[in-house]
Amino acid sequence: MNALAATNRNFRLASRLLGLDSKLEKSLLIPFREIKVECTIPKDDGTLATYVGFRIQHDNARGPMKGGIRYHPEVEPDEVNALAQLMTWKTAVAAIPYGGAKGGIGCNPRDLSKSELERLTRVFTQKIHDLIGIHTDVPAPDMGTNAQTMAWILDEYSKFHGHSPAVVTGKPIDLGGSLGREAATGRGVVYATEALLAEYEKSIKGMTFVIQGFGNVGSWASRLIHEKGGKVIAVSDITGALKNPNGIDIPELLKHKEATGSLKSFNGGDSMDPNELLVHECDVLIPCALGGVLNRENAADVKAKFIIEAANHPTDPEADEILSKKGVIILPDIYANAGGVTVSYFEWVQNIQGFMWDEEKVNQELKKYMTKAFHNIKNMCQSHDCNLRMGAFTLGVNRVARATILRGWEA
Ligand SMILES: NC(=O)c1ccc[n+]([C@@H]2O[C@H](COP(=O)([O-])OP(=O)(O)OC[C@H]3O[C@@H](n4cnc5c(N)ncnc54)[C@H](O)[C@@H]3O)[C@@H](O)[C@H]2O)c1
Image (cartoon, rainbow, N blue to C red; front, side, top):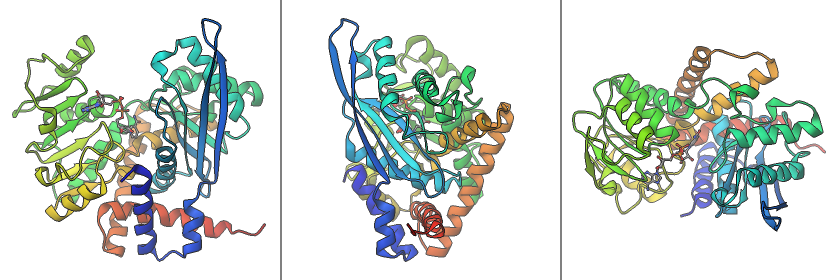
């Protein structure tokens, strides 16, 4: 099942639990607007190259649309549509006043020079500048884009609309980015894990963790779990996997990765088969890399008691069913990885206020939002007798449905 089908299925199940009218359901599902633009740039050698850029703006009932811009050769419209829709429910679950969007350009950023990437980003911004905006649609980095990409969008957009730092988030700090943004998704994952474990009268200290992916999210989650006394007993990335039953020394592993660019040849653990990592004995499994990694091939062999979905869509629906039957507790992606968009919201608030928060305030507010969202999800689980994924979906969909009904349809 692809990402769009899985998202639509979860939406429909939530809609049924909430008893939504089928006409309202249709109105919530269809994107508000789909934008597709031609972006032609001169390459460094003087030849022309044309790329297709797009933005799917899914819903704006609760506020400006919010979501990443990715540069990837296989930008797949169905997947982007699903991700735009997921942003709508995610921002609603986190109770931040945004809707959802997603976009990108079909290109391989590794094949483009820095100046070609800058030209491409500026042309794309020129084509969509009147359809995005501080109170309309606020892009952020995603796969293949970064703070520099956001700086170029901010600069190009500001040529048309005046200095507008709040038009994008995930900016460099020097241009109005927020302290704490880089760590926010991993930190949010850890706050979400703490809220879940507290329900079972457990805490991170002394529990064993397996983490797939050691990039932005995985490395921050590992570092914070280690700081809180959790034992990270196995980690992996694209270069390999390693384990240590006594707990990996994460600060040392971070230094090793910084120095060598790889997890290989780290002497504080033994290398292991990356496929074995997901079914390794542990208390908590945190996938922080790719979608679909838990599927019908491996779900029955998973030994973790808790799964925290830091990546988007790590569990396919078949695995979801198998794991639920086994009694594994899954904290769903639309909540577990919402820390990044929550701190993006703080960045936007700071830009609008023209006032910069210190990092402590950012982290404190993030903890408040993540903890509150968890309790809101639990309440939905109780009201609708459902698991955490449906608790999160019913919470998000219900908030968007209520806002839509309150706004009405009168022309
Ligand atoms: N960064 C954010 O703010 C954010 C927010 C929400 C969701 N997410 C999701 O979290 C996930 C990770 O994002 P990120 O920003 O950390 O990306 P990243 O590119 O920084 O890191 C990805 C990591 O996954 C590893 N990886 C890739 N293929 C792998 C494989 N086959 N086996 C094991 N590891 C593999 C990479 O080596 C890298 O360590 C993605 O699913 C992303 O959509 C990220």
